[in-house]
Amino acid sequence: MGIKRIGVLTSGGDAPGMNSCVRAVVRTALYHGIECYGIRRGYNGLISGDIIKLDEKNVSHIINRGGTILYTARSKEFLNEEGQKKAVSTCKFLGLDSIVAIGGDGTFRGARALSKWGINVVCIPATIDNDISCTNYSIGFDTAANTAIECIDKLRDTMQSHERCSVVEVMGRNAGYLAMYVGLAVGATAILVPEEPIDFERDVIEKIRAARFNGFTHYMIVVAEGAGSASEIANKIKEAIDLDPRVTVLGHIQRGGTPTGRDRVNATKMGYLAVEMLLQGRTNRIVCTHQGTFTDVDIDEGLAMQKHIQKMEVDVLAAMTGI
Image (cartoon, rainbow, N blue to C red; front, side):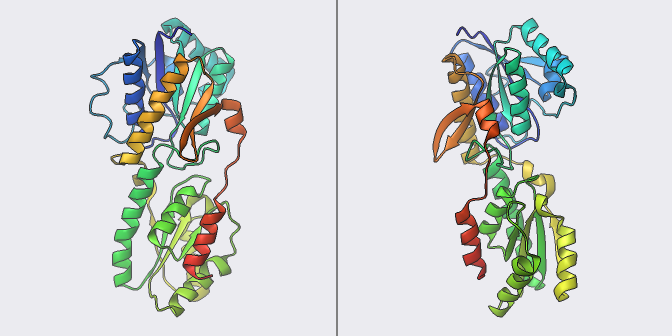
């Protein structure tokens, strides 16, 4: 396949490491003598033609920057056939041979729609939620987890001083991977995730009691946003055992910040692989990791997969919290 021009976009929620990935796509393309164009504001930019040429200067010193220099958005117009036709028309008009789409499930579904119209695409997983079923790891997860861990460690210092119960809400949309990882890392008293059935008495109240019997006077409850509101959890705790929990919603601070080394390196490798795959004629694929190895899957196959909380993490949580 003769590739002359590649377009790259970031879509959906931003994730630390997206810039590192864009940089890798651009530098790898230029290394092979291929022009690279940045599509700004996701699929909205592809519809409207909001596109800029990228070179070494554009991507210089962005490997350490959070967010995305290409901006990101969710496009309602692209969900319908008319919007997709406009995007395809832009690709044809500008002579874009292929699109590298960086983002989550929604981004991949958009790329799949483009592929149905004959556009060659390769997708790269980037979401702090780490909820993409076909890959063990997504760009941005490590940074977001470390940001949340640092915040909770600081919160614990002041909460312990006052012997209080803390309820901390962690992002993740409808997935609990980030909350489970963060909760285990901070030694939470209880972790609530949407993937696991919640018995409030068993999973929260009894664990607080067990901690108190073991001599602790501060209790850290980590809840995934998809498992319920931190405020509602706090109110239920107060009603059940007359504690007065303090609520902290970490929110979008988890999406920002300088990407960790792990996110930078993985993003760089994935961006490189995406371009190499296009050059090899392997299109309509998702770059992913499996058991520590970089690989790829067909978009349809990848989107059809399901992901679950690891049983080992559930078992470890039970052992660490004494129930």
